[in-house]
Length: 216
Image 1: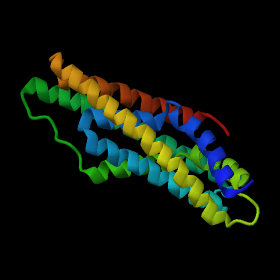
Image 2 (image 1 turned 90 degrees about the vertical axis):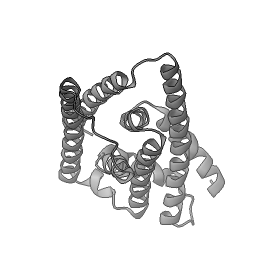
Image 3 (image 1 turned 90 degrees about the horizontal axis):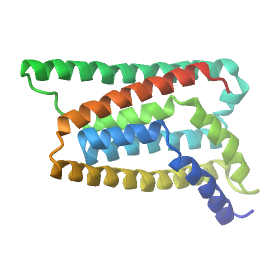
Image 4 (image 1 turned 180 degrees about the vertical axis):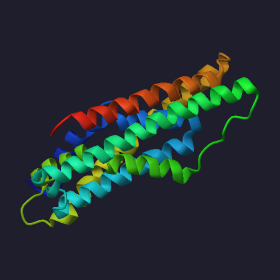
């Protein structure tokens, strides 16, 4: 297997993983609908940065620790689960506060900084040990003999990142089109955002609980 065929084969596998609905998709959709295109792309870029870091770590052999050490995997798993649950409850809490503010006639909080959206996406990905295990299991299978493991690992991770950005771009633009339709129909954006925050908060908590109770 040469480099081009390895990249093409990995692209097929990673592409299927990319389009599967999951936590990353939920975060990008929520960011797009709640805060707009720039924040959605910042979240997507953060997610892909985390994936690239995992890919480099897998190529360097660092993520072998996750498969060799049950303790290391468990620690990272619970850290990721706790972070997801914390984010989920944070969304639900802010939803309740915004509801109270609206009832009292207070101003609704503004958008977060782009760096916050980027950091949220990256942190969520880095604290998900399943991503590390995926890269550790898959990347060695697509490294041709005689090539640099680190360089090939980076190339494979970049392929996954490119596919991810293409997919996220389609999602973000799709959400914008839906938002334009809703505005034409005069659906209240505030009510739609509150509903989305509530659903996303519950989804994040669900992912966190699932990550905490599920084994390898």
